[in-house]
Image (spheres, rainbow, N blue to C red):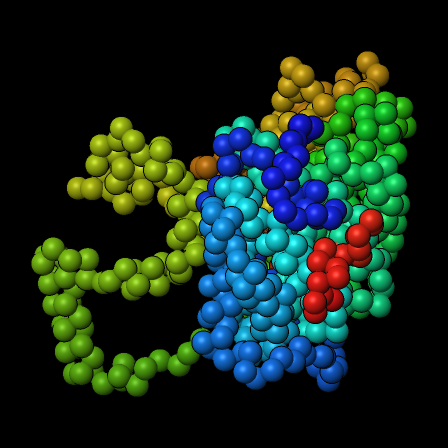
Length: 604
């Protein structure tokens, strides 16, 4: 990740931001289109999510930025925006007149924040900021003469919004933009990663840390600051000063050890803790064994949600020497992990059974009055029969795609899930039409379909269980496949000979379970449920969970045991009361010069 940079001396700008940003990129590397598109998606999603995280009462008063009415007319704003584009794109320094620089600064440091903090411009925020970030990226990649001024202006404008008492949507977006500013852009030709501005400008780093640490701050702003620190640690760790690494280590360790604060959902807290795991991993050294011990503790704590426990287990797969001497009881760790896998399978069984009961309890509709009218009913049958014949013989299917999908109980998302679980376009190359049609389960001329489409509930259940097993296997041997690789990592890489045998045996026991879960012949819900019951029993043995005698005798099929909480026998039809429990959901001033732009007229 370490790489050399060359400081350019051709710029007229000065100060810490200028020194950090004056870099020469030999081939003018730019971020890929994929990354740009991803930025826009993130900005759009934040518009929706920020309100969910904010936890702010609707009655709270937020400030706005006021500008003279003559400065915010559409014509004036368009002129300022054109100047900003000229600043970003022109390759001729003589075109960067004082007027262009002034108007560009007005747009970026005043007009953009003015719009961001006003609710009537919320719909414009995402494309406006995406265009601004794209301009910075292109200017840096092309090494234009205005790139440093542009970066400084964006820094000033976004810092103003991030620190102010403005609507959470604006502040969250501003924090995320600050986290994505780079002093050195990504070079697609050499593959050199970007160098985040926050890694080399202490003021920006301190701003982000301060926003995150403030417990009185809006939760969404804290989460955005954490995400920005995550990117700084991921790409900028070689440039981070020792004191900043120490600060990050302490702050992230506190996050890992702290329970969810009041008003924050436990799963949301677990999701934020995943950022802490990553940050600690990025800035740690192979000699630091603290993180490995923490991750083992989290992954085996049954009070921790799957979201952080399983993620902690999987991150152990990236470690080797860091785990030496940190696993006191390998067998105990594996039993704890097996209990989590067991609980996942059991919760899926309960969820699917609850779906069955809910479906059976549906109230039947009374018969149509037409059924009591013999003559009309007979005519209706004849009419329906003629329509069906015409549809089939006329070359049509008798129904449109919407009708067909509705008749199968599938919507578009289910159809896409089915396609995702099947083959992609690459897998269809070299196949004839008949093979393609057969592989899609459509059949031609009476041919039996090669395989039935997977019911959506089976596909979702399989994905959840497979993800759990893959994360546990990565933690154990460094691979999501139930095989010990030639160069393993994770627990087995630092284990004693005896513990290696224990780990290998555990992987061997998990293998048939993983194979059964991914058996594509389990193409209906009944087969899937039967297999889940068998895997539940197998996982119970690995986890040291004692099952009831009836579970053992029935191969784990609890559907034959009845419903004790209702006092019903096992073969009782599901004419159940309507109060059954619902189904469970599956699953940045700067040193030596102050802030950039300090001393300029109107700088904040």
